Image (cartoon, rainbow, N blue to C red; front, side, top):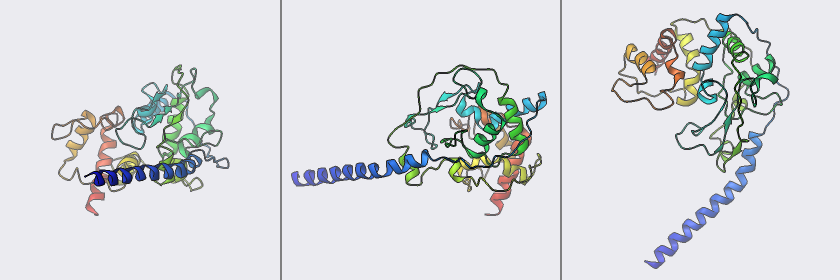
Length: 279
């Protein structure tokens, strides 16, 4: 028995040493990726409207593209409470989501139109550093992006004083082993822009709406909704309650998805049904 315990202890001790040594090698590799700069990106010129309809629509875009999910309902910033890689464990470090307003600690006063486009569509800050936990918004249409920026430029100021971003020991390792990549590393920054999708209950527009879904669920989407009807799908997103009466998870119950209108959800449903039929 003593020999077994001794061997088990030696094995566990060796495993811990191996993990520590591996981490020491991977940590600087991951930090290099997280600190990578993109200083030669050609940023597109986007028309930024000023009319009230566009600004109202921009608020809708901010919600359904999950800006408020990370940056808060007032876009004044938050400390991210969930694992930015998608799980439900506490964030491994102190990760503030920026204050997007013109208040104290906010970025809006110092951002021009080009800065907004670079940050949202390319995932890169004005100084060239990556927006580490930014979703990949490279496919956002010019109209949606323009309306979103119009809204961001006039939201009420919110003062904030968040602690400096500090990574825990695990987060820098994830890009080193390929589990996680900042959006800027994935985006094809020089790719030609596609024509803006025409809003409507179509497969094409549904695919566009699914852009955010793919980033958590992957391109396969799974088979959970195989027995669902369209009305179940729309009702679930609006209520946060699944057809079986259970609550959606905290992410799927958020305002992000309740804000989607029937046309957007019907288009998404149409796309998913078409995708499922071709498997």
